[in-house]
Image (cartoon, rainbow, N blue to C red):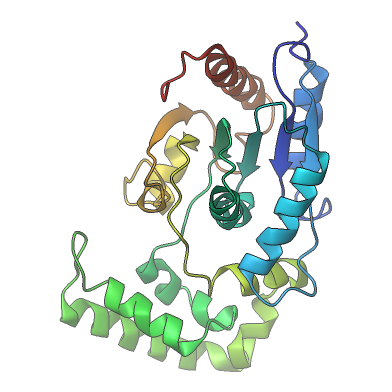
Length: 267
């Protein structure tokens, strides 16, 4: 089956270099083997002052390759969603609304998760951002009690003191340099809501492990235009590998066909 003649080019928004996540490169190649035209977009994070500036470089790269006469289709996996959200916001501000956007198991870490694992310290998140995140935990609809918030802060402080002799200041020994560079831009960023509807391809394993049974993996709070969730097989790491990848590609292709035909869930 050759999809090349019936579907627009699919632009892959990739954060990680190939050596960090070679499985996703193989997934892209598997998509291409079915006849789907995929353009892989990856802009190294070095030299950008924040996530918005980095996202702007992605937008420029995509638009330099995209034919304005064709619908714009985007796909992202894992941390690729971190760059695609601000990129979408910039596209929308320019009056460009993609016809299809697919997120493969993209999640946002909750404030409590970041605190419990020392992520804010690890990725040098500014203190004013950390303070806002603490306040978010006190607000509806998922409001926590003041005692729970202060208690988790105290436990994290004690844990940090215990970790210090083994891991050093700001846990430098825990850092993968390439991952660190990406997350130093993304973790301090306050995400803007977007109005482009999204297709979320999420594993039930990730929903149970990372998202407190939120099937949107906490991405839904940024999607004012709505979203549809497709439950896929495997784990976060394995969903893009055989044998699960074939079914995932079929699901994405079916959704893109429906969008092109004007009968998709958002039409």
